[in-house]
Amino acid sequence: MSAWENRVLIITSASGIGAVTARLAAQEGAQILIATADEAVGMELVAETGAVLWAGDLARANSAESILSQCLAKFGRVDALFNVAGLSGRRYGDGPVHECTDEGWDTTITQNLKVTFQMCRAVVSRMLQQAGDEHGIRGSILNTSSVLTDAPEPAHFATHAYAAAKGGVTAMTRAMAAYYAPHKVRVNAVAPGMVRTAASVAAQALPEVNQLIEDRQPLAGGMVDAEDVARAALFLLGPDSRYVTGEVLAVDAGWKISPAYRPAQEKPA
Image (cartoon, rainbow, N blue to C red):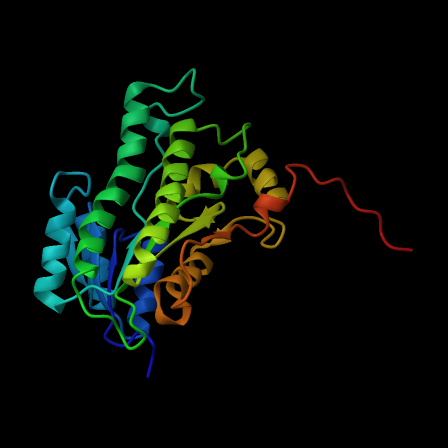
């Protein structure tokens, strides 16, 4: 029997890493609610995985409470939350601080940090009320940070509102983990490097960016596959990591420890 059998998981995305996570979790027997603003994509994923769909603007007031209410009405509890929704604010005006617009800042902070906070607030409040599992754990929350919070890249990824939002996610994750550990609720984060998704298509089309990513992510020799992040996410969300909390796991193929340029190494004699 899978460790995920009949465990209830909320995922706040129907594309990219969120979609792959939903597929893997469904294969393991999880009961899933997908929350997304893209109803058409959400319906396709629901048809594929058997998940329940909540469609709407996640940033709207009371959306988090509505998502939780639908989950409880269908499944009666929530064992895990994967906060994966987010966006690049570049098209709204995100960039270096001296160029970042108010719209770029506000949109990026809202979609990446505020939505995560609102979902955490609603779900952890419920987790505190429910009985623990066979290990006494009441629930697990996984937030999505970014490798750019610890290893910025000024030439091609100078989006400072995004860095601030993801840095806020990391700080909130650790603060929550410390506070809720005595209450048997775990809180971790995953910090992906550059991932091969529909959202990264524009970056993939630029030869200089591809070269940068090849240098910074030597284990993959380029972009990381969404499935690799999804598998790490399921580990941190599920009972196999039952005593792990307050961690920020980088799935970055070596980005944080690799320079932007690596001179060719001499062949050993």
